[in-house]
Image 1 (tube, rainbow, N blue to C red):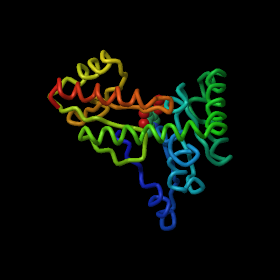
Image 2 (cartoon, helix red, strand yellow; image 1 turned 45 degrees about the vertical axis):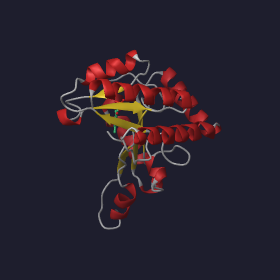
Image 3 (cartoon, rainbow, N blue to C red; image 1 turned 30 degrees about the vertical axis):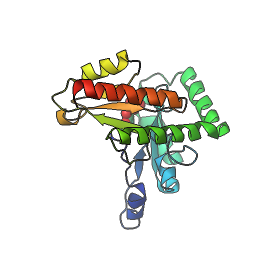
Image 4 (cartoon, rainbow, N blue to C red; image 1 turned 135 degrees about the vertical axis):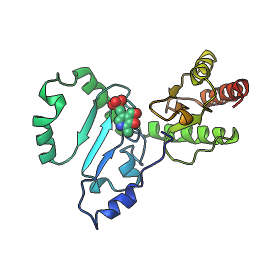
Amino acid sequence: MEGDLGCLDLIAELRNCYNFVFVVDDAHGTGVMGACGHGTSEHFTVSELVDIHLGTFSKAFGVTGGFIAGSRGLINFLRFFSRTYLFSAHIPQMIVAAVTEGLNQLEARPQILKSLKRNRELLAQGLKSLGLPHTSPSAIFAVPVPVDVDIRAVAKRIEDLGVFTNTVEYPAVSLENQRIRISVMATHTEEHIDQFLSVLEQVKREFKF
Ligand SMILES: Cc1ncc(COP(=O)(O)O)c(C=O)c1O
């Protein structure tokens, strides 16, 4: 929720001592983390040690659905027994086309990932100057909203001032941990980020938090 990274390098080391299946649900890392955007396991250079890679298409790819990548045996098993194959319609072709093109773009235009990394850096610096330090290399940013402040009113005000953010509210988190989540994109400009930071500063002042 705050963009913390799991210690995949340490978990990978534990494989030397324990026999377990290493599953990484990298919803927020796919297309973002690692030198080529291959995800958090690429960031930690442990991709080869992960048994099952899960991801969603609803974040970096901007559509819906998701994927599981693993051994042929695992994938064959899932083809017969996973719920989405048992009674459901398959993933629509336009989603497959969108994701395929997303993957092509990620490969063909490394500039996209560079812009994202530059933008997340700008946002991290800006938030730090507002007293909201962010130490993770992820592109997820959270602004905590105190429990006695109406988070929906905060989000509405931010939206009225021209910026869309998401609220993360109870029961997804405890009441004390409600926060605004900011999703920075490769296509944001420096001006967008400055605009967001001044909107946030204003809203923090108005709502006194
Ligand atoms: C770790 C993790 N897994 C899965 C999901 C769900 O993704 P989807 O949008 O495909 O339901 C999320 C959504 O934020 C997530 O953070």
